[in-house]
Image: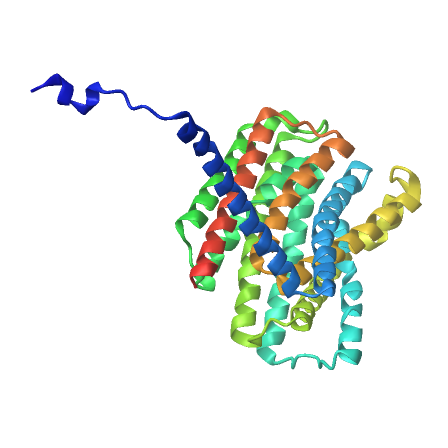
Length: 370
């Protein structure tokens, strides 16, 4: 064969004009994509009134500020001398009247009427309220002995449990991204477990730390179950997801949890112990009262924010904000409580956020296809 006829023997020459045109084409393609995304965002913004975006911003801020603040106040209660898990659990739901106040203008001026309380709906509120009271008590155990940063990272596993219980109870779809998220978040919990002894507070025994670790995981699992059961109540009993119906459910569940937690306080004789606990509390009785009061307020503001995001946007955005809440709580705990951030904990934080992102992407694609 003639060597001159072999194309591989001839170098491919690109003219300077062609070489210069290549980055221009790439640049113009990138600019086109940016312009498309900008137009999409602008179109989405213009589709809704200003009041909608204001309420969504307010609701999102409520989730991102109130829930981390509530978690930090729980840790502050125990760090400054608080002893009772029942008291801090009770404080979380004692603010239920705050949420109920928002129903009054809806009924008076929004031409809405209270949802009919059937026996099945009443029974569902009793069950969900009892489970919520137990869930708050489990988290109280966690914050009594674990650093706030560790407790918040472990609590992030509730998303994995929500996906699993949603699949078995509500028959929600589980795609590969959701399964990937479950595995990743579980890996984050395992990494925390491997570094368990490095951030144990002085005076906390190994048994107390281990029990708190277990109760945090169980509380996350119970939280996922509550989320799935709440969704089932909407599907089977309520059939609609308007703002005042979602708010009514939150109020009733918080009220029932308040009743069960109050019974626990009485049985455990912690109501009478409040006075002596307040006297021995760091910075005095006023500080004690402020911690409990703001625990009640911030928890209910977080509930209101979550309700607003679910109604105004979607569960996907609520998942995004929940993902952002984890690093906010962890970083705030490092700043205010000087929690140690070991390499294991930082790795767990990165993996947890990655798991959240994987779940959100998978949920978005499932919603788009449906």
